[in-house]
Image (cartoon, rainbow, N blue to C red):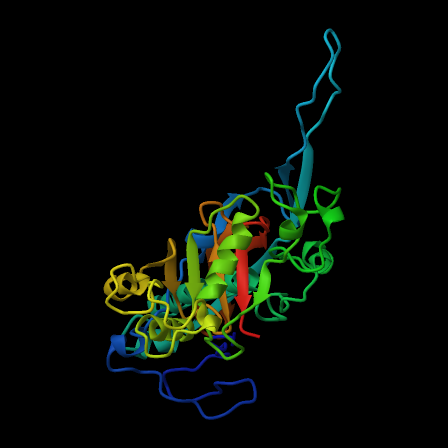
Length: 371
C-alpha cells in the first residue's frame, strides 16, 4: 500500500516569496479565490476503530501487557469421599508498544493578514484529516499484514510467515493471525497461542490464517472458494465470520462473477454450468450478488457483510468475526492540540497523541493473498 499523502515541508507566505522546500526555491501564491477549492476533496473513510479495534485507556506509559484466559480446567471422575485434583487457570499475555505521534502546523502572520479565508482553521482541518488517514493506514497494514513500512514498523506477512515470527514480540510488535508451521504439539502448549476447541482435529486447528488465493496472483483476483476457506478457518476455532473486506479491484471481479460476464469455473468456487449454483444465472433469486448490486452498502455474501474500501490492499481480502474485535487499541493520551509559537512570525498548533495497537486475537481473522 503506498503512503498517502507525502508531507509538505516548510512554510510559504502569502507574499509570493521565500522557500517552500528544504532545498529552497521560488514560492508560489497561497491566496485562493474560493475556500472550497482547497477544502473540497473526497475523503475515503474506513472507520477502522469501529470495525477492528477494542479501545482501552491507560495512565501508564511504555509497553502495556494485556492478559487473556485460556481453556485450562476439566471435570474429572472421583471416588466416593475423595477430593479431586486442584486445577488452576491458564493465562496468555500480549505486549503492546505505545508510541507518540504528532503534527506541527505552521501559519505565518502574513498568511493570516493577506488571505481571504481562515488559514488556521484550514490548517487544523487538514491536520485532523491527516490523523484519520494515519490511523486508517496503520490499522490496515497491521490487520491485513500486506506491507512493510519503516515508519509504522510493520513488515509483510505472507502464507509462509511462521507462527513463531507472528507471536514473538521481539520480531513483530503488532502480532497477527495464526501463521504457518504449527504442529499438533503447539495446541494448548505453554507459551503458544493455539488452543483446542470442541471436537476439531489437530490437523484442522494448526492451519494458518494466511493463505494464497485460488483466483490467481493478479491484483483484485477473486474466487468464491477463498471466502469459503476463510469462513472455515475462522469457524475451526469457534468463531463465525461476520465481515468480508475487499478492495475496489476485488469488487470488480466479484461483480463479473455475479453478472456471469466471465465463465463460472472451478477456480471461481464451483463447477461451470452448475444450474444449482446461485451465481450461475443473474436472475436466480438466490443469487447473493443481486442483493449486492441493489444495496447502497454493497450487501452480503454467504452471510458476511461485504465492505468495499480503497484502503483495503488490492492483493488481499480479509474475513473476520468482528463481534469479537481482533485488535486492541491502547490510548495513553488522546489527540491533544497545543498552541505553538516558534517565532519568526509563525503561529500555529502542535497536535500529538500517544497510542499503541496490536492483533491480540489470532482466531478471529483470515487473510487471502493474491500470490
